[in-house]
Length: 104
Image (cartoon, rainbow, N blue to C red; front, side, top):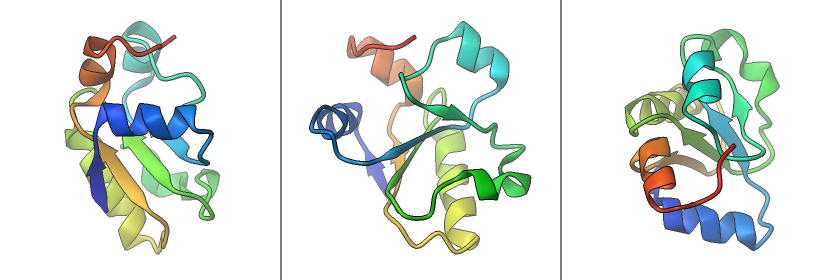
């Protein structure tokens, strides 16, 4: 597991690299604060019971508001046998939006 900067993630997405964007915030944060286009919402509180919805054949970038819950989500995925590159987006959506990157 590693931390990925918003710039590194944006560059990877722009290059068309396969990466699953897992947003682990609450539904209210996802809708109200915005999210990265293409990201999938599975709140960290629900992740243990929804592991089957997360692909195990591509890198996964976990996203939250500031970076804490995404780290927790990465640890949960690793503990459940996800043997792919796991990234916690440093600074979360706050950093993504502050960088001026697109969100919806």
